Image (tube, rainbow, N blue to C red):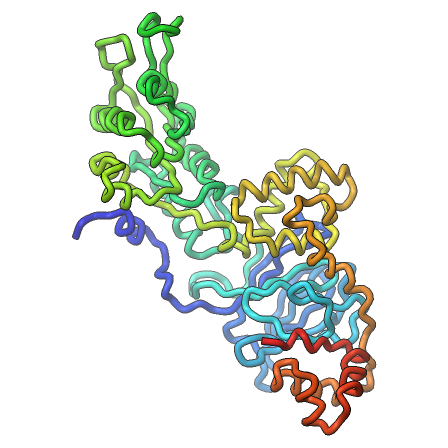
Length: 465
């Protein structure tokens, strides 16, 4: 079988994407204290999730044939018994009849609403996410960010498949195996390359070269160096990027943008382990470890004749694909905390829940780079105050997210109506939020049903599907 990038990649530990995916609950971000640990809890055998304020912890119990997951969060704005989620067909039903501050599901204040896969919900100042991930029998059912293991702090992740790939990266770091890092722009390929270099323990530096920024007419001089007087403007000897990485790592970023002449020149370096500076006839031996990255489809470029097949073969060692941020929502809390620690004033940053919700709901088309720039600007704009929607860029600061702030207006439901509440919720489930149909079923006027729903804090719109 012809060796391709996908073959090499598949053989390096990534789980088959067709493997079973199990439901999980993520405690994804504490808005007021974003440096607090986050967590992930598997729900494959859970019937009820009980959520409340308390010292951070999780217990799993079984009572009367019902499996219950109890999650406590150190959030002063949550009630000790803030509500529960019950498994209901292909989704969960959040019921919060009497907490002081209510709940938010998919951006809508509510007391009772279904929560589907991929939806955020908020209790107090803590944001949760119902999600799915590949089943991983080797990982604990309940996992906190503090318990995550990895070769480098920058390589920690809740994603089982990404964790496997990054572990492979760490295993090959001390070897001479070339590494190719794939992924969209802004996914953190250079951060990954820096971690690879640290793990390699090579004595030399890491030298990053943006291949798309190399001027074609000066490409060999920039890569391999030149002698004084070799061409107009060569006023002194220069070692070039390759020799500058002697004993270390040469990181070729966006290698798919390397011009054809540069591809041929680089191939000679990889084959012979030597360079010839411009203006010199004597080759110079070099000891560099190669790491390359690109957002382009190299196999397609090889097929189209725009990327050399022999150079591509030289790059085929270990390939790691960094997923886009929209596919790493479970890591958003980790990444926000990590990026804030690196931002001046960010370690003490706090979020108004509406702003935290906007960050988690955004698709991040420019990936981690966009998230980093957003947080840096928000911290600067807030100037020590809690980060609010007004401190976020336009696409995130839309009024739709501000509905989160309205949650305090929801009053607790009456304690003496559990039977009526259960009847209404069950009916809304059957009729997919159609109040008129529910009223006909109950033999009541539609306005009467609406009055009950308002009093009990049940939002019929949340049942539309």
